Amino acid sequence: MTDPPALVPLDYSRDTLAELLGPDWNDSLVRAFRWMTLARVLDGRMLALQRQGRIGFYGPATGQEAVSVGAALSIGPDDWVFPGLREQLVALARGHSLTTYMHHLFADDLDPARGRQMPCHPSAREVRYVSMSSVIGTQVSQAVGLAYALRYRKDPSVALAFFGDGASSANDFHAGANFAAVWNAPIVLCCTNNQWAISVPVERQTATATLAEKGVAYGLPGERVDGTDIVAVTNRLRAAVARARSGGGPSLLEFVVFRMTPHSSSDDPTRYQSADWMARARARDPYLRLEGLLRTLGLADDASISTWREESDASVRAAIAVAEAAPGPAPESLSTDVFAPNDGRPAPS
Ligand SMILES: Cc1ncc(C[n+]2csc(CCOP(=O)(O)OP(=O)(O)O)c2C)c(N)n1
Ligand SMILES: [Mg+2]
View 1: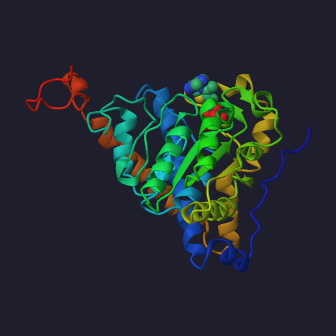
View 2: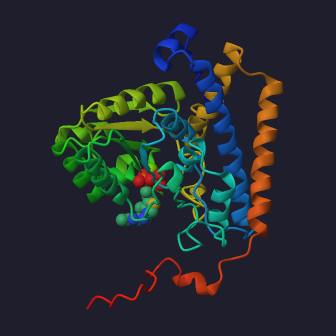
View 3: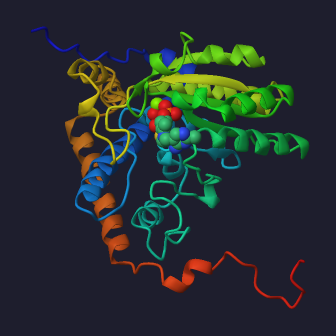
């Protein structure tokens, strides 16, 4: 039996980090690690809660956290995020309340959507995080439409659209990519290639060698990025965001990651993934790679890491306690916010 591959270290000097991430690189990396710690704790707890029947559904993002944190570090407060199933960390790292997200996961009366949306499909208006439709790929064309509107209104904000490798074969990706390029929409198309569309491996659902090259057909610059390297993700996203914001046009970034947990709480990957796959995934764990870099640079040690883990654990437990104590939506709330109040005007015929 061969040994599993060792963790691939993140190897950057201080000078290179300052060049790639700017003068506050050390603060950014520590913040990124703390958010990733929270995400790990959250995924573990929520999958357990789903198994206990306490929430209905969950889509974990373990292995993909560097993409979400890198995005949060790359955009400003007025920029827009159109997520797929696994980008909630972008909303949280931009300031969305963990407790409000928990109300959404419990689908209770304090969920902004009052339990009408599928769990794990939150919206966060205050951080411009748009609710996702489960219909694969639709967020791409919606995001491109919004980005076009930004340009039309001379609004300097940009949009990010997140979607998976599977979604790069869906109609809306192609319509959206074409429209974005033709209309020079200020958007970054962020394809998170976790190498699986549920049980279908990427090489069985697309014939191109990379997903980045799909941009070529539409006149979009496409680039493949190691999505398990927070430094690379942040540096390339910042460049693409700056390009979009300055009128340089849209681009497509393919972030190669490993989906380290099931597709969702409804999935059992042991039926289709090999042990070898998981061993290769562990060698590219974005969280452990960043942890190693922080330790090497003297920005984290056993004591700080265990404090951050305890803090994350406490905040997740506190949010769960609050949400679980909240009442469910009242049946009559089904039609609240659905119909406009009767203001005396005749109904449209
Ligand atoms: C139009 C459509 N077809 C099929 C599905 C069922 N479905 C849900 S998730 C998924 C796979 C998505 O894979 P990918 O785009 O790679 O994203 P990932 O889940 O890996 O993040 C499929 C086929 C769906 N939701 N919508
Ligand atoms: Mg996928």
